[in-house]
Length: 119
Length: 187
Image 1 (tube, one colour):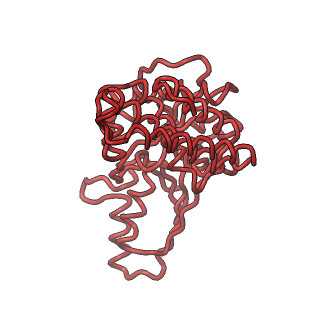
Image 2 (image 1 turned 60 degrees about the horizontal axis):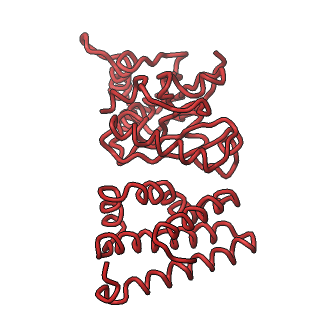
């Protein structure tokens, strides 16, 4: 991908992925695991978009589009999104555990590794 | 598609899986579900391992169902946790996709719905309609025979959990004077 021609999307997504991840770490440290899960997942989503951008030069336009593209072309990323998304959906009415927050943090770190950015 | 879900499915899964249970609206006959809720019950392994195994199972289940699969992972602690809002639905209505039986049967319990009703305030013609509804007429089966339900005593019928909606919807057409109780019987 030509980073000069992505209208700054790479930088924006990198910044948001990092910001969500670091905010999640803060919440995790305060034992606010619901907030941590939501923020780690948002970081996962930004990183998934970065992965897509890096590989095909464009970003998904919606959640549906993101799932469709990753399912068809990047199953290693789709599997993480599909696994973690239900927890994001449930986070408003179910108590999230420390162990779950750790799992989603590891997922964010795994995709960051694939994309090649430091969180 | 609904029929398949009543059967045992041939699935590959690890020894850490205790059961794979269908629950939620897709279990209730007479419902048109938007999705299929599945609970995978694990022995005590890490959450990360549970989620990875559930994803593998989900991919297999997508071949059997034409609706989106919502899969949840539990060990016995999280299944019975008060914060698990799906607990009752899994325990009472859940059907094992591995055995084809109710999940509760693996714990030595039989789940059944008891419906208490009273016809005393109904007009005679509605009492007759109600009787036809349950028992049929002119050689046509009523709801009880069609759905393996039975009359336990006057004013009390016992039915399978998945038929609760069929019975309550039909009975509401005639009377609102009935009460539904969910019971566990010993095997």
